[in-house]
Amino acid sequence: MKFEEVIGQHDAKERLRTLLAENRLPHALLFCGPEGNGKMALALAFASYLLCSNRHDGDSCGTCPQCTMLRKWAHPDLHFTFPVIKPTGSPADYVPISDDFIHEWYDLLAGGPYFTIEQWLDSIGTTSQQAIMTVKEADLVSHKLSLRSSQGGYKVSLIWLPERMREDASNKMLKLIEEPPSQTVFLIVSENPSALLETIRSRTQRMDLPRIENEEIEKALVAKRGVEATAAHKIARYAQGSWLAALDALDNESESRAFLIDFINLTRRSFMRDVGGMAQWSKNVSTYGREKEKRMLSYFLRMTRESFMYNFHHPDLSYMTQDEENFVKRFAPYVNEKNVLQISELLSKAITDIGRNANAKMVLFDITLQLTALLRQ
Figure 1: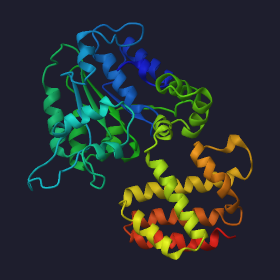
Figure 2: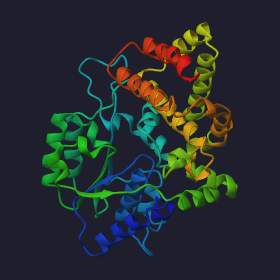
Figure 3: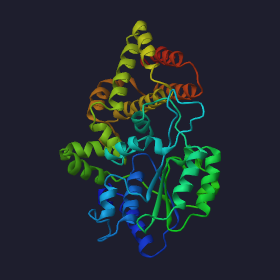
Figure 4: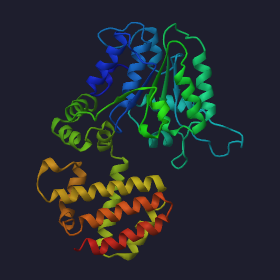
């Protein structure tokens, strides 16, 4: 992967080039920032840049033997570490490691370097298990990096979501980062760096990447996805610096589109005081699982905010897809200064309650009941 394939982040690209050119490359870089801003894409592009044998014009060449291997992410000196699960039916003493899921990982990367933990879990056949890294994983990384570089250059260890390491794995990884083998570079991509051991954070050089500029997302939508310019502008504003959100807006089968349908059904049935329909809605969405239910409620919170702001008739305050706006223009009058805070608090409390293992069906049905009164204020 080349730097030119990473959307935006021009300052970060130049910083990485400079670190290598001036021989100031740290042994561990920590890439941080909001979801969808291209942390993983930048780390993959820099790994390719480090391993390329014919860098020129500030990028990897894309054609040398190293780059040929990197196109399939099968370079022997690039080692991936990522959260994994213990498949159902595994022996009691089975401890999963990244290599057990490497083919699924390559398949995910083949679809592009912008993805979420939810997409990764879905690709390995689960949406409910907690994906982690164990001390066995840290031992494997240590063993791989102790070997000589097969190509005579850098050895790159790319670690995705290290905050999911167990404590014993973190301690083992800390020792490895403190005293890395020769010519080894750690590229660590984190969504929640505050969850890492302070001693690990202190031994890395942190790169906080901002959200992608709207103009960059616009250009990428037109160039990479063939989106018409006016639609690209609207989607870029909706995405608010996240390429994942932009892709989500394009995907007819996206989770957000499904959540919009759930939101429409919830508000309509509550407003009509259709108790049977409200009960059925609660039963249906309570099967999603806690993590998806929290994402759904967070989406409802955003739509509540968008509905309230729509009443000001100021396009610059709106961040919606066309489908969302089509619904909100009819729904917005029912979200006003009398109820917007109460609705927001209701949804926020529901997210907290579900996170604390409250009965999801009861929590969701309670939302429908309270909305019957709130939407008529």
